Length: 247
Ligand SMILES: N[C@@H](CCC(=O)N[C@@H](CS)C(=O)NCC(=O)O)C(=O)O
Image (tube, rainbow, N blue to C red):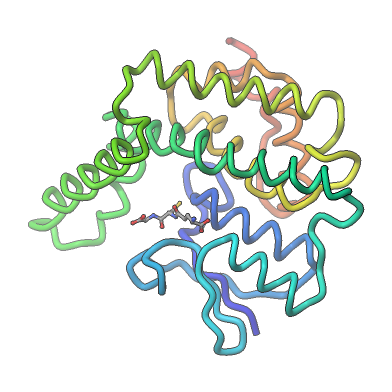
């Protein structure tokens, strides 16, 4: 019995965390049955979401969960790819997680209006006297993380420029293929989809969202992944959304 611990649906997404999304997509790609439970990151063995309980074995971090699934269930998420293509997929994955992903953190946690209606609401279940302190502390911690990885030291324009560079790279790599590595989804699509969907949802407003939506093939890709992986989720295709058409 597999239980996936994540953040759950919110903000117009089937799963808030791009890393939990990655694992959930991998589970679905592998056709493995699982239960899903919302849980705070502090309960995870590594202090972050996702983690997974597989028949009593706890595995934390989306990458190590992927390795576990591949080993235990004989799945190869990169089946059919050459050694060079696997290396390319790994490089794309690192760009998405270790670079573009931080711009998503910046959008949600450091743009005050987005923080107020988004992540700040995670603390609404706490006693009222604790909520403000908690909101300030966690936002401060996220700001420190952004400075530690470097992106938080740049101006808004510079952060936007860096994010757009990764988006343009992804758009060029995708080209007119259905998925990043070709005709079939592979391991890297799980996280590219999670981060791109997070950047493109209209719930959060940010200059990078508009820039992301300007890459037609990336918007089509998110819609394709959503329809294929989360058919049960009520998702309006991005190019049919009124705010997109008005843009
Ligand atoms: N390398 C990790 C990254 C996971 C991650 O950043 N998770 C976020 C949620 S999207 C989290 O739990 N953050 C809480 C924290 O860092 O304190 C993975 O791939 O699983």
